[in-house]
Length: 183
Image (cartoon, rainbow, N blue to C red; front, side, top):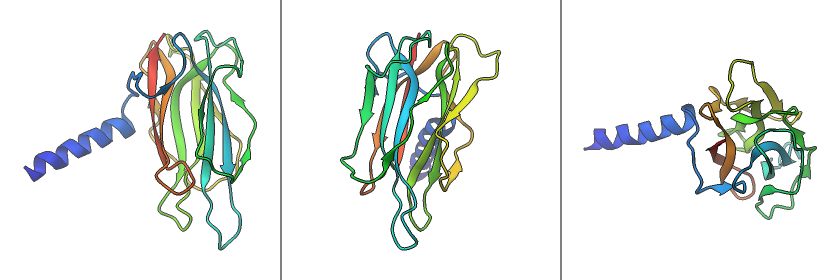
């Protein structure tokens, strides 16, 4: 019985962390008919040797039509933690005509600061065509941690559209799950 439970836990973790992203609508999602093509981070970085750094404290995903030609900030998913710490960084947009089809995180966990997520990286491309190498979009920040590998991808024909944050620490974003939408 213990072996069965251990295998089940391993399978759930492995498919979440290393497999394709699920198609989900029960997360915090973009309005119907739109997907994510940009993001903005609020980040609290190094504050000194004896103070804790909290990494990403708030996050905005921008939702637009799946053609990737609109760069509007009107429809957005705002993830906040009522944290006074950090500064908003510039908006990161996918190149015109593309949307987010894959995602990775830079994580600094189990270190002195245990800062959790310290940066986001996104693969931008066309959901229906994976023949071209997707561009890599990330906030150009000097942060601690390592990029999670392998990256997580939406299935062909889908793009990133939903997000489920976990603020399990006092202030920073500890981890997140993502979901895709067929376009």
